[in-house]
Image 1: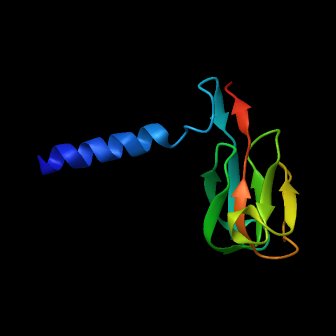
Image 2: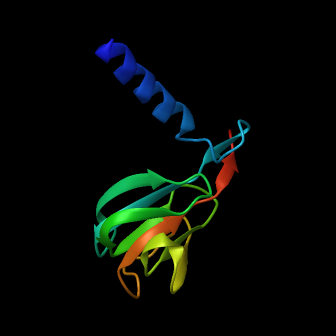
Length: 106
């Protein structure tokens, strides 16, 4: 029973991960980087919803022909920067939250 409950919880979490994008679209991806110069990066997405980051990030770029928005404060508050495919080698300030759009599937 314990295994079944765990499997159900994982299945529900996986099915709701992209719930903010329609089926015809995918969540836009952002490469967010701890260090200046787009170094020490990892990929995140948000499906047009605000997502908080675990720590402050210094640079980044989007994965496609769209822009994501990064924010100086958690919960997508405060000053913000638009981040496109060319990205930023150094944000004006550390960012703590972001939002990427839903994009058409290819």
